Structures are given as structure tokens and as C-alpha cells.
Length: 191
Image 1 (cartoon, rainbow, N blue to C red):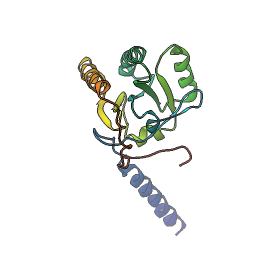
Image 2: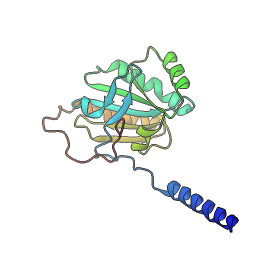
Image 3: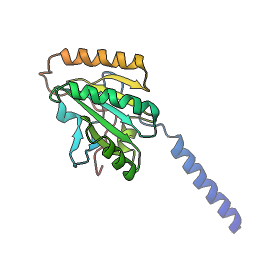
Image 4: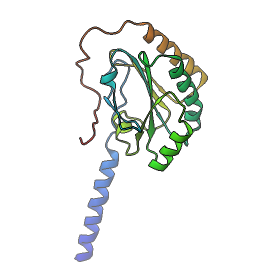
């Protein structure tokens, strides 16, 4: 009888774990949608939120040191930020689920970069964005809406990405209130 209870209990735990893994991941925000606001903290502790950058174009990319395509994309993003005034465009590089020592080593190597770094060690930010592979890049327009989503990296994707950014930078800043739509997902520290 005790053995049967153990087997039933083990089966219940296994079914519960399978149900958790079968739960759908949060959807990645699509073009025209309001993305999750919170992007993490910089190495200096500054919280980065999309809502605080209304009126400028944001490029948000999820990136990891072990990803060869990410390493090819990074110099392009860094050059973009170096050539466009931060009052018009901000590139935010969200480190994707790497441990703290690895993240700190990346920061030491990229200490002269112009981009804004955040660390998503727990995966909460990337999960809120529906990111499960890298690089995964979102371009956010001046009104705070997703204007472009790109997965992976190629010369063709960079050309299309550049055209979208040029178009968005040429648009006047929004003069209406922030979008009233609910974000696809939200995450805030302590939530």
C-alpha cells in the first residue's frame, strides 16, 4: 500500500511538471503593439523603461556572449549608437540569461561601447518579451510601439533594420498621450 501511494504521488508530481512545461510561453510583442516596459538595470543601477524614452527611437536586442550572430550584430549596434545622438535613439542590449561573472567579463571587454547594457540573469525580461533565442531585436518607435521585430542576424536583416530606423528617426515626435493599449506582458522588479 505504501509503495502504491509513492507511485501515485510520483505520477502526480510528474504530471504537474509536464503541465508547467506545456504552458504556452508569453507571446513576443508584434509590430504595432505596446511592448513590456521594463528592460532591466544598467551596471550603475539605473532602471531602463521604455516609457521613460518616449519621443526617441529605441533598439532593444537580447544578446548573449556564446551567440556568434550576436557577436557579429554587436559592432553594428554600437556604431549605430555612436553615430546617432542618444536624445534621438537609444540602443539597449539586454544580456540573455548569463551568469553574473560572464556578464561582468562582457562589460569589461565592451567598456568603450556606446550602447546601454542591462542584465537579465533570471530571464524575467526575456520571458516577458517571449524571447527564446538570440539575437532577438525590437525597434520601438517614438510613441512606444513596436515598429520592427527581427530574429537572428544577416546582412539583409541589417539593411531592412537600418531602413526602419531611418524612417522612424525622420518622423516627428508624438504629441498625444502614451498608448492606452495594455502591454503584451509586463514585468517589474518585485512583481
